[in-house]
Amino acid sequence: MRIGDLAARTGVSVRSLRYYEEQGLLVSTRSPSGQRRYTDKEIDRVRFIQRLYAAGLTSRTIAELLPCVDSPTAQNADAAWEQLHQERDRITQHIEELARARDALDQLIAINREHRSRLAAG
Amino acid sequence: MRIGDLAARTGVSVRSLRYYEEQGLLVSTRSPSGQRRYTDKEIDRVRFIQRLYAAGLTSRTIAELLPCVDSPTAQNADAAWEQLHQERDRITQHIEELARARDALDQLIAINREHRSRLAAG
DNA sequence: CTAAAACCTGACACTGACGTCAGATGCAAG
DNA sequence: CTTGCATCTGACGTCAGTGTCAGGTTTTAG
Image 1 (cartoon, each protein chain N blue to C red):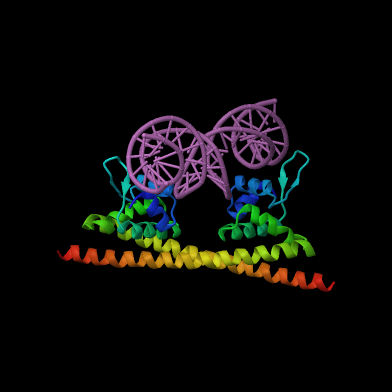
Image 2: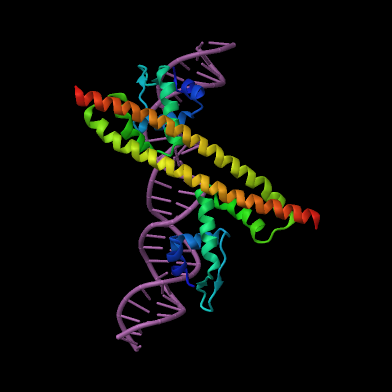
């Protein structure tokens, strides 16, 4: 599977895939001429990376977490434990923050509705 | 109230306050020498702006929404209506995305726990 | 065989909300 | 008066992920 195929099947740009590799998030074997080759496994890998990006994790953080997933040792498992819980807490906090912001927006919507009905009547 | 005071009372940097003004989100009267003066009203204003930023709204979007809040007319109320609902939907979608990402992280945490207990026992 | 399309590396551009610095001015205290 | 802090404008730096271009090689289709 070439990089364009992987891009097509994941919806991620070719540029991003090369960037992921540069950041140590994604590995590829190379053809004799140097072109990247991927297996189907990498599809899930990319989607997984996208998930973590969506969670607001930075590529650096993801890179720190992945060794624990790929080849767990006592050392990296312990190191990852802290970070995993830290990120989980951050996401939870972010969700709550967004919920509050949505409430604020709902108030604006209510005000707006009032304005609109009043202005439509007036 | 000078800009440093407003910064202290809102927890927002002086730089940011000037930036908000530059973007049309915040207004100030000026002393004869040109220094910005604020009233207590601006404290709430800044906090409100921060809320919308936390919701992921861009300064441009906030600037489009504010006229409807400040001096509602039929025109800007109608224009804001669409945008308000659009942003609300976006936030909801974002929250769901974060929740999914957190689930992914929870799976990682579960895997990590297994590794740790296995490695501790082995 | 040849043209087109895909790939390579390397580098610069962009976005957005700021940080930060420079050089000048304002203002309160000793 | 002067010392020193706050403020002003203007400009450039930052981060992170990605777009995009240049210039060259490889693969594929006709």
